[in-house]
Image (cartoon, rainbow, N blue to C red; front, side, top):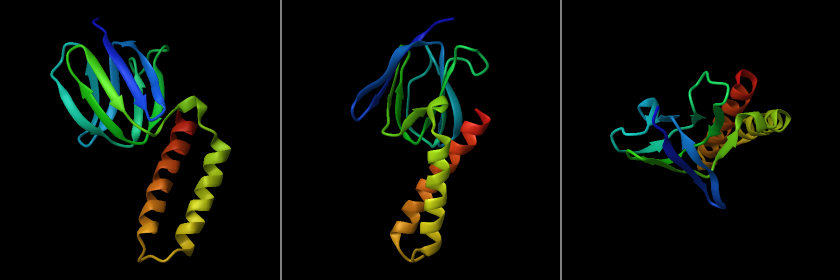
Length: 136
């Protein structure tokens, strides 16, 4: 099967680059698989799991991604994000502590402030990491 070149860029530089048969990630319309020689795509990336390789292949790599942008054409896929970590590298104790701190801050906060929305977004990301660490 044809392979496509994947490059994931984070603020500090290149996070990942290499060739793969498929990259699966979540956009606003749901999870999609990007492959070589397919139609071009430019989209936002939603909070979700990014899989490099086929889902049930032992050599596939799974990552938590908190959002970003993706551009794909027939020969390459470019992803830009500032929130990505390999699922196997998630620190569960740290995420559980962060979950408790965020829930406490939300409960004690003023519901009319913008900060509550930011805290709820952080909590959503933390809960996703916990869920995928325990199910990954």
